Image 1: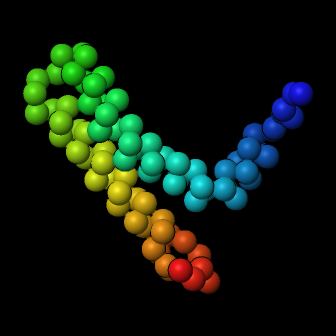
Image 2: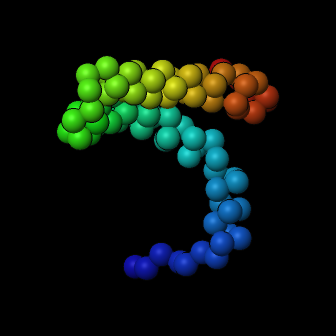
Length: 83
């Protein structure tokens, strides 16, 4: 089964409709992959000690803030959403 080919306008429309889901996936990647694989990759290219740990902590913090923003009632979500 082949996936249908989307035009650029259809792709932009799909992203515009699903931006919250894509932002949530990005935030989860920042929270889980940033401090683990990101830090590992930065150590693998021989960066000095504080840089990889600071980048890992920053990606964790940024991901958690983004998740909190997306899940906050009236914030990143729709104002009619009730928790």
